[in-house]
Amino acid sequence: MAKEQAAVIILFGGSGDLARRKLYPAMFGLFQRGYLQKRFAVIGTARRPWSDEHLREIVVDAVKTMPGATLEQAQSFASHFYYQSHDVTDADHYITLKTLAAKLDDQYQVGGNRIYYMAMAPNFFATIAEHLKSEALLTDNGFNRLVIEKPFGHDYASAKALNDSITATFDESQIYRIDHYLGKEMAQAIMALRFANPMIENVWHKDFIQNIQITLAEAVGVEERAGYYEQSGAIRDMIQNHVMQLVADLTMAKPDSLTSEAVHKVKGDVFDHLHVYTPEEACDNFVRGQYTAAVIDGDAVTGYRDETGVAKDSLTDTFVAGKILVDTPDFEGVPIYVRTGKRLTRKSTQITVVFKPAKDNLFNTSDEPDTLTICVEPSEGFDLVLNGKKLGQSNDLIPENLAFRHDPKLAKQAPEAYERLIQDALQGDQTNFTRWTELAKTWQYVDSILDAWQNNTTMPEYPAGTMGPKESFDLLARDGNEWHWQPTHVKMAD
Ligand code: NAD
Image (tube, rainbow, N blue to C red; front, side, top):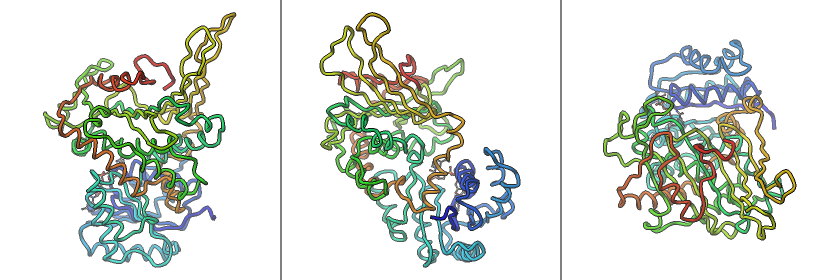
């Protein structure tokens, strides 16, 4: 396949935060690496009455300090950008957009290839898709692909309504639903770790795995996003999408190949086997929490209910921990503990697989479980902790850590998540995007927990800067387990 990808990219939300912070730098990365060269144009649309020149200045500003960038290169990249003031609810604006896209298609010889990127508030997604159809923007030659940001719905019913409206214009093979966690280096590395190493692959099974732990910890609070977050909470914001996708990566069977079709087939099987709890079980197995005021490193930190835009009696979860069970033959009965939250001790995404202890311990001291920790961010790598023999003349055991970290300098040069995902969309590879059937199952699962919580208005609290409420620790203790990563008394690299 030729390296250069030709397309007109129509970006809805061209003046937005996501476009400036992530999408323009990602496209620039593709430009630097030659995936975008001459045959591409980007139409940024938003409500403001900007000119092409103004958008180009914004783009240059967004990319000029990227590694390896020169001002000349940034300007050459930005010269491919065009701006259209566009109200997504106004049909006439789509006609103007169609004319501009056709002109650029010709000018840059892109052969009818189009990417429609929805980077605006989700309540506009359906309107845009409908207008793209009614005003006939899709081309007959080349590809037409829709890239759509999260959140994809608020619950199963709204996700289905959104899906119905976009599938009236695009079929599933044209839809690229973003879950940017799937673009992260170490999330993508899970498959290699599992399936390219027989010593790992052969013990990746309920006979050898005691439990799996997934932590997505944020140190920041709700920041300026209270309006969105009050309606979402941690379970919708993080569990339904990122955490569920990681659960699938960790428990799916080996795909027949690395094609999108093969990978989604085995992932789909995991979602089909999620163990759905009764309301009572859901409350026992999923705990939530809300951060309260605290002093961290001498600074006073506001509690959630006192944050601007948050209701004083808010029952929004800023933390959630749960035990997920996947009823497949290989993983039945293996607890998958997940937790995520705001204002936790430290920012980190990591996964620990805790293996079962040796069957008959021949040694003087009790053996610790072997563990494999996959560090997704901020550091990228893994730790394999095995029992070794203590130095000296004894048969005492000691946990030994075989640690690997990507060189941070090299890791910085690797494409960022959005860059990988936009490249995939340009190349027509849907592996790292979510399918509707996956979303449907994960929303139904999350809805069942939210429904159960409705009848239980207790909201456990945790002081900002800690790792969540006591109930999260109790959840594991009940099974005789504990959270492996406890950054107040760090056992492992983080
Ligand atoms: P934003 O509010 O910064 O930008 C919204 C954009 O939509 C602006 O360009 C605005 O001009 C445009 N817009 C609003 N109303 C319009 C209308 N009627 N017609 C035409 N244009 C209109 O939002 P954002 O932070 O860039 O987020 C965009 C999407 O990306 C959202 O779905 C969000 O959930 C998702 N997202 C954002 C981030 C992030 O880091 N910002 C991360 C993940 C997902």
